Image 1 (cartoon, rainbow, N blue to C red):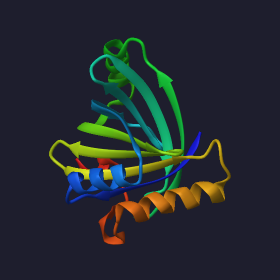
Image 2 (image 1 turned 90 degrees about the vertical axis):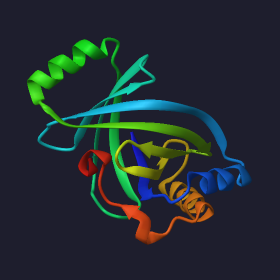
Image 3 (image 1 turned 30 degrees about the vertical axis):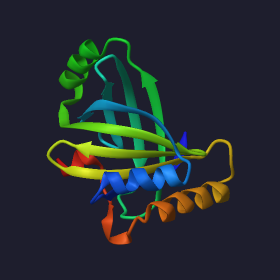
Image 4 (image 1 turned 60 degrees about the vertical axis):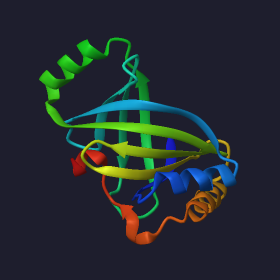
Length: 165
């Protein structure tokens, strides 16, 4: 799968929530996530545990640029996360652990994440999934949401949370 994404520092999640409501984005849910990143030679591989009852293995490759960029990713449900984490830790070693509370909002094919990341602060992420539209349409939707939220270029973050912790 492929999406167009960016991450930015955020001064006020409350301001962004207001803007999301005004543009008729839909709040889907709020969840706690624990992401354990493993040492892999290329890309990023993480076990995401969600609200302590669901887990996914996510592998993705993207450039580290402070701008909107494409990401290619794969996701797989993990029915036994404790056992998987033990095996993966033994096989690859843990690179970092990121703990966050995430609000998931949707606008069209764009996932908007309002994140409160432990020891790092507040962030907003956009992920416009390219599946029901052309790349040009995805870019237009992505830019619309970015503009609506008032994201400033100087707030963009080039790397993963795993690189910041």
